[in-house]
Image (cartoon, rainbow, N blue to C red; front, side):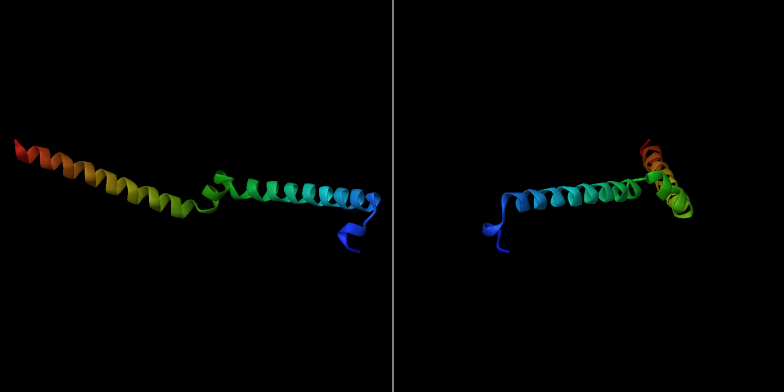
Length: 76
């Protein structure tokens, strides 16, 4: 039935059905967002990669500090 031929009761029923469907969709989305943004779970799941990345970052930062310190020592 075309939208302009629906009764007010049919329109209200359609609005209520859409409202229920939207509520369900929002709850499902909330759950998915909670899982995707749980950084602690991701950290535990990828612990090996995180430790490797931290070691590499420490090595790079430590090497950079040592290199800068070496430049200052040479200028004196």
